[in-house]
Length: 186
Length: 357
Image (cartoon, rainbow over all chains, first blue to last red; front, side, top):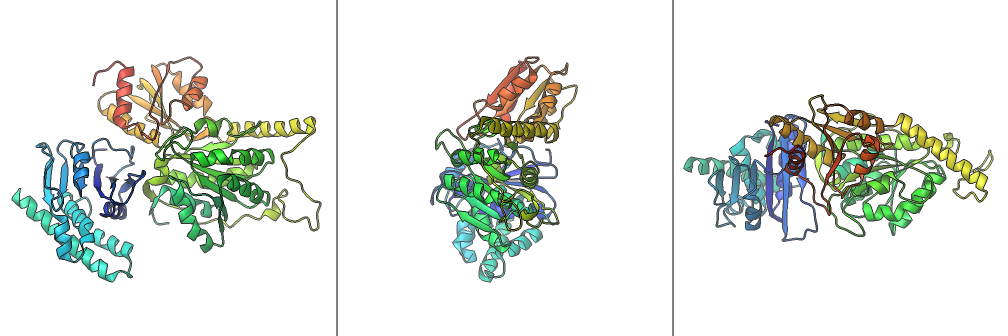
């Protein structure tokens, strides 16, 4: 239990939060961890909210339902409102500051403002915002290595989307740099 | 074989192929639709057939007909769809036909909702259709266990020539976990070697498969045969798991499926807070592990038995039956698609032990 880590990815349907979570789950499994990926499933629609939780552990995972996750990556305002207050004390919150102009108002967690949409556009495709966020989260927590993460991205995208692969890899790099910069600023 | 990260629904579909099943009939319904989505491209790859029927009533009868041919047949659905199949399940049981039926349960009654639930326990374990029959009911609590039990379900169906159900709440179908499949996939079975299947009567006497017995003596004979099978289920097919059960336990929790995992986390956290609780998890819901729960519950250190379900209380009646009034049996549940959290379970345990948080 002590080695268990949980993270919620939450945003609008179409922002790639499910994919970001799945890629993290694949990567953690590849590195020998136990993983569970749980989607919010319900009467969802395009433009509505979507979220998934990824649980990573060295030992058998009990509840797939997490009361208070250790971390959350929120891509839009409704997700911040929903998950900002649920994060465990001492936890981590990554806020997509391209679309969210407020913070959680909590002083008992680490909060990072990451303009993932802006950075994704610079990297070549706005749709890569989820990869920028994932990279920022991975760089901050060290939950998996970038080496495996990149390898799994290649495996999952395949060779038929060479162009997207380049953009996504660039998004990873930018997300990683961003996390470093934000942390330096404290 | 290498580990794969798969959604429960997809893994269950692959498990059926692994068990040598090639004949699948279904109608899409949330939260089970990914089984059909997966098998509609995967089955043709291995020479199998998926028929999307016009309704679950049709699915049930296609299953009935195909099962009579002796091939491994299965369907998957969710609660309202399973209700529509009950007539055919009763006919299959009466006609001694093997089939595997998966129910990824959603909230009911009626159309209810689409979120996880365990409120079809009575329907599955107490005979969903009419008549004197029972089906074996298996309940996995992880994606890997869903794979293992799905393969087992086909073997049990063939062994007893009886329908077998696997039931999981919506979470089991929707969540992704790492799974491993057996190295060796089974070849499809050979109905002509079965000794009972309808394979064409060329060179042998014809066979009749039916559930209609107008002569009461014959019908009773058939029902006693079904009762005999039921005794064999009780003797041979009981499966369960105990978690952190010890003579320090003050409470024994009974839960199955995803609910059991949630209780495990609650138990781990309570242990860290100095409260010892054990878990009894039935894997076969029918036959129910009657003796196990009785023997664990009556141990001196157990003050109360707590049943936790995603229902208003169904399995709790079996727990009460087995504990025979020798210990208080308490209940906690949520319904409508709401899944009790570890905190809620902990709260209930504290309340029962009159502990403050």
